[in-house]
Image (cartoon, rainbow, N blue to C red; front, side, top):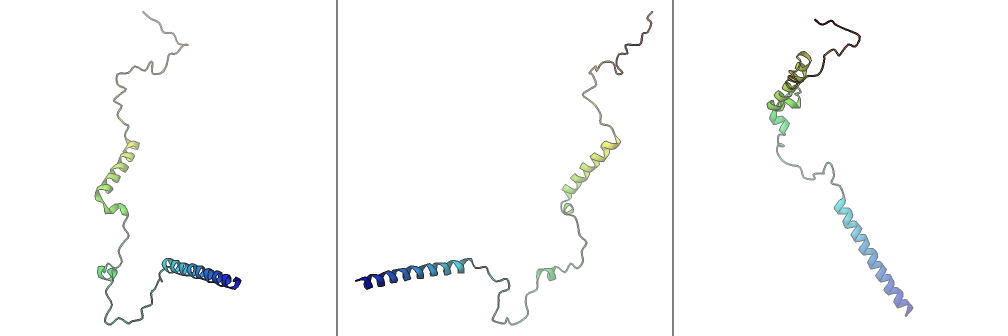
Length: 117
């Protein structure tokens, strides 16, 4: 009777062990990274396709700033910088202070007395 129970137990544990191994193997196959350069067993006949860089045939081209891609944005930026430069050369017009009385400009001198007629 004990031998029968041991056999059943061993069989059960071996089943669980096999199931666990299969599950791990499945996960490993799912999450395994693809090879960087796949091995192609079959040779492809004929010439290979032309790449995009060869088709463009641009050669050596000077580097251009990103702002040059959009003329509207470039002009807006130029205008913003021109305003900053102009602030250093020309004073801003003060419109809100025209009618306000701010007191005597130089202050009241207490030590000075002037005669009156």
